[in-house]
Image: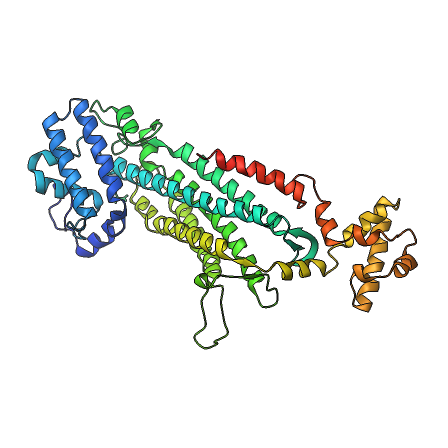
Length: 460
Ligand code: ARG
């Protein structure tokens, strides 16, 4: 057992208590952020005249050495320490002696862990934002490639109206752009530095919180020391944004699974992103899409867990807050894994354009366009709707589509119909006529692609 406290205790901690209380097995994950925070703290202590420059240099050199040795594998973060903070401090004292004992001057583990968690979360957020940008680029490319790839659009999973793959992918593009905006919002709100808040009530040392804050890339110091040590809103906000990303990925995966099914056959998932069956040799399964859909539950679980952990806590720090780490870290890793795999899978899918177009032609997807044709010939829409209903019934009884009817058959039900009906309801016309902004028509889609192009250019 290696603890930072013990002076006021007369008995050893029970081993089970020690194990239950320790966090080293999971907070080792932010060893780098812990040391970055300590280095900024020490620089500030020296600038404020609380440490000498020699002490500062000794400590900085010591921490740099520890960081280097951890990263090159020569120093193990051993479980015998209570947490990552104890590991760094004890190793430092071991290596540089008494100067190391001054590292924790004007600091508590409460503001230290608040900082570490924030630095780690900020790093993860930036990485996830970058991955999301790659996925958005993949969607952008697919939109450009498939402006004319026809497919059926569905409501209630029933064929509704024809549209294009560019339009379908464009829907996810909008979701992912909103997700990106949410990540940026979380960053803007969270980027204030809690270091210098002490245990809960600040410190009596003349700490320069502006300095540590700017050394660590924050907008400024947080404004209330009690809130600083007990705020995990930003974790909850990020988990919420990540849950929404997972919900979007999961919906997309569900569609990929449907498109990949034998019945639909719209796509072929690349061999590199598919798996086989141990018994059925013919199988090629969409396991990656299913796993991403499945892992969504873990991320929702982390969000629910954090909301529940925080809900009853009086100010300020309570040990319950140590529970912020394991599930949250798991959620960050899960989202990163899912984004990487999903992007790889999506960018290598081959789309079977013929099957998609044939499917778009079936299921009376142009029925609305027949009604629109009648409206253009002076029939009120409600009457047109009913006439086309009769035409569809007529087709169903004969197992044909609207395009297959002869002009005589059309006219027997509605005399205003002319030869130009065939062109008016062809799949090409159905798609190309829909050109209001947001619709699947090629002109509308090109406009949106242009807007997205600017959105992407603004990222740099
Ligand atoms: N391992 C602790 C945590 O993650 C560090 C803070 C400990 N502070 C305390 N007052 N016991 O929350």
